[in-house]
Image (cartoon, rainbow, N blue to C red; front, side):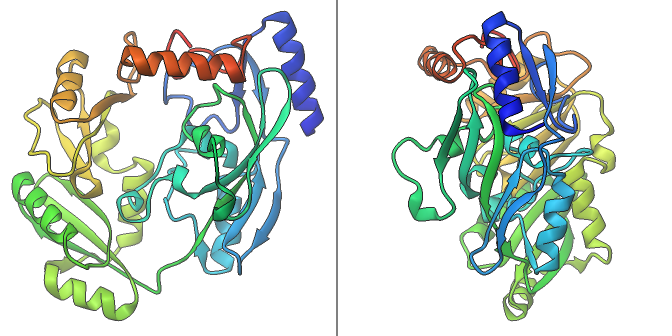
Length: 347
């Protein structure tokens, strides 16, 4: 389908008041609330539009397989710094719409930090462009970053430009045995030091720390941290990112975003800790108890995956935030046809 085809389809649906389910590879169908509406498949609108390795910028269409984008970058010794999970046959547009970042997020930044510009088809069928291909173009209302994580509720991300980075020259992973309380203390202590830490994960008494950067920096950090070197580190971090690690075999999974200094959370169920303590994964748990624990810590909890999400996937909005969400939805999608309910049931 062409860009004009997307515009016609959305314009027609708006006139009829017919909800549309914007979908790429379907790898994130489990995330957020249940998709509904007529399927609008984005995969036919694919291809890398522009890639300038010397400028560290890549532009691609929404239906481009995420694996294809990463392969093109790998061939030039570059990568997506936020290390996005695939969870299946992910597309470039779906990656941005979901807004999910992987193990490197705490060190490199979140996906939205690397979005330079987007071409968006809104709920009126208009093709709108925001941002550009260089960081200095970002000004005013930063809509290009606003749509990152919007799950297609504000518009179809037809095309996007991302800042990319060189792959680290050297990388190693160390593992240390310690309880969660000691691991959190160590992670926060190391965060205040100039150490080349690019990812961390604690589970079942074992702390894994990945070091990335110049060889001398990695060697120096390894001497400071200690521990045993992990032989198959690439497979380990891929399992953490793609949720194929045994911990993620649970049917109900909570994602708690809290300040990194938050002590170990006294909640029932197994936990896996990432992002130097800022991300806590919890297997099972009652919604009220989990969300209250996250709130007390100064964070929030998302029901990331579950057989059913009767209370909604995301933490309830405050009245002020709810009003802002409604205003944005009304501006970009006045007929309310684009992925209705994916973020919040009322939007």
